[in-house]
Structures are given as C-alpha cells and as structure tokens.
Length: 377
Image (tube, rainbow, N blue to C red; front, side, top):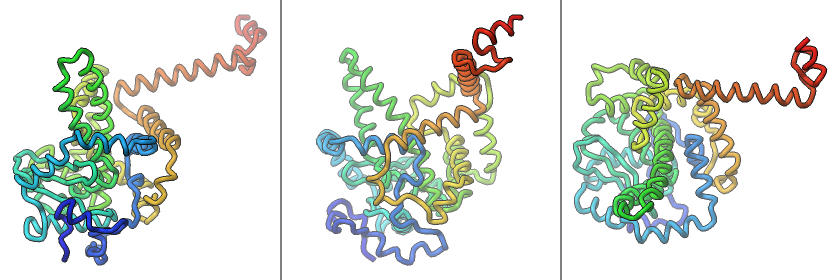
C-alpha cells in the first residue's frame, strides 16, 4: 500500500486529475457504504454556505488575490510546526486513522489525500487548514474521546468535507485576520473594519460547520454515530448516561424556549463563536438526514464537480434567501416569530393598499372611492 499522506512533496508528484487514495480504495468501503464518484461539495453544503462559496469562486481574480496573500499567511509555518511537534498519521503511526482517511477520500472522491496529524491537546478539537493544500489536525483529546471508529469516521469525513468545499482557504484567512485584528487595534477604526470582516467570516464559518457535518454523515452513513459524536463533544465520554432523543429535545427547547430577551441573548452568545452550539448542530444534522435531498444523494443523484463551473450565483443566492425565509417562517424562536408576524402584517397591509389603489378590493374591500363610501355608509 502506498503512503499518500507524506505531505505536499509526495502528493505533488501525482499528475493532474490523479486521485492517490482512489486506486487504493476500489474495494472500499467494505461494509456496504455507498461511494459518490465526482461528488460536488454543492451536494451537501448548507444553502448559506453554498451561496457564499459560489459567489467567491465566481469573483474574477479571486485566486490571484489569495495566492498573493499566501505569502503573508503562516501556512508554511503551520506545516513545519505540525511536522516537528505532532504525529503524522500513516501506515506506521495511528494506522487505523490512516485507513479511515483513505476510506473517506474514496467515498467523497477527493483528488488528493490531505496529510493528517495528531497533536497533543487535551481539548477535543479538529481542524482543516491551509491554502494550496489542506491539512487535517486532530487533538489527542478528540482521539481519546471518540473511541468508537464510527464516531471518528464521521469526524474525519467532516474535515474532509471542509477540504472538498475549499473551506480550508477561508478558515486560514479567518485565523490570519483574527490575529491581525489584535495587531492593528491601536490604529483608529482599523480594528473596527477588520472586526466587521471577522464577524462576517464567523457567520459563514458557523454555516460551513453545518455543511461539514453533512459531509461527515455521507462518509459514515450512520446518523446515530454522528449524533453520538456530537453528544460526546457536549457531555464527554458518558454515553451510558446520555440519550440521543433527549439531546435533540434539548435543541428544540433551546430553539423555541424563552422570550425576546432570550432570543437576543442567543444572538450575543453565538456571535464570538466559530462553531454553532453542539445541540443545535445535532438537530440540524438530524433534520437534514430526514430530507429528500439527503436521500437523493444516497440514491446517487447529486451535483458533480465537473458541473461546478456552470453553478449560478443568483440561483444559489435565491436558495439561500429562500432557506432563511423558511427558517423565519417555521421557527419557534420568539424573535423569529415576531419578525414573521411583522413581515406578515406588512405584507397584508401592502396587499390591502394595493387593492385599494387598483380598485380590486371588491364591495367589502374598500376598493375605490365608491367602495369607501359604501364602507362608511
């Protein structure tokens, strides 16, 4: 078996279009899980995440700008840091994680197998960073916490989903801008401008996490395992004390409970975070696993990446707007309900005024001058 996680040098030898992990994985996965040849990340991306990415990819010169920025970003430094002070996963080190990575790349049909590292940190965490070539990093806290391979498979699929979507580029940019904001804090208004960009990137970042959770589910194809992994992130390695349905009930209570004050506090609590709250992620993923979109992917009907160039920015924007409108309309959150009621009232008022102006109100609608006279009489 050829080792494909030796870093940029060994992977760079592969020819254009070659997929180092795919040849190894012709018989993978062996447990009946489905593969998705040519899968486009648009298949699983959250609508808000997808519209932002499509728009960014369509910007003329966007790649050039990021290549120019790459000299400023600490990517090479990060690679050297993990190479020198972490454990690189391969056939000889964390071999079971290496197998999971190859398996993941086969299912998602990644063109390159990202280097994977395990770093000493008791806090459970994982990340996918880099510009030209993403790398995946798992902390020892996460490796020890997720002792079930099905749970870990979902996490590696999650990070590979970030790589396939191109999230690593923007995540690295967010890290860079966050550090830059500290350095320019003394410049009048400088920190304000960067903080606004960071806030916007964090909002996208949170949506990108929902996309990556979906990629993890496509890899593991085990919703219960994905739920268990998220529960462990929230409550530790105490599965015998936890229950998936009860955990999902928590999320529903969080979304619907309280009054307007709680709605505002939810917004303030989530603003500084890069990830959505864990219970919310579990509920989002559970709901998506029940949708027709998920079933269509599992049946083999999904967008291919060779069609990405034809993706419409306006269509993605419309889908994103439709998603948010649907969220506001169906949400049980008090603030969202207020917004929906106000919008509904404004729409109803607008319709009445339009009918009045065009005389289409009918005998009981106050339409026209005569209609108005009949109403008063």
